[in-house]
Image (tube, rainbow, N blue to C red; front, side):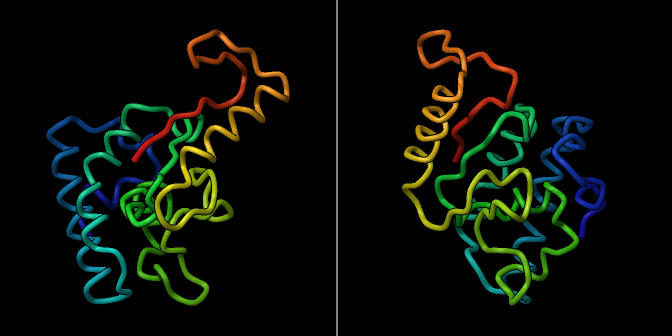
Length: 156
């Protein structure tokens, strides 16, 4: 595993990196995904390789897990898992008692809901917004909300 990737235990660690280091981290993450998927666990290679930089950028820009990122396609979360405290278990991906191949709510505070294939993020995020409103969230118009809890962001 790469030098930079070994230093990332949460998205907060990403914010300490320069843009140049983020590019190097993306390369290391991609290499780790290739290693795991091709030699250890199998899994969704293409979708994950195509979302490395986007995943790093979302976690770099937003204050996760306070800002919530919804992954519509569960096939794209291996980088997300690498940088949200599960790097040391990545070799158990999709294995019995190992990491789930998609987001898994009980696995990490960064996983908002359990998902698999595409098409779940819009209805789930709208449901969460409606639930927040029902529980007393304050609307500020045009889809922006102010409240003490986490903000919702739809990603990937």
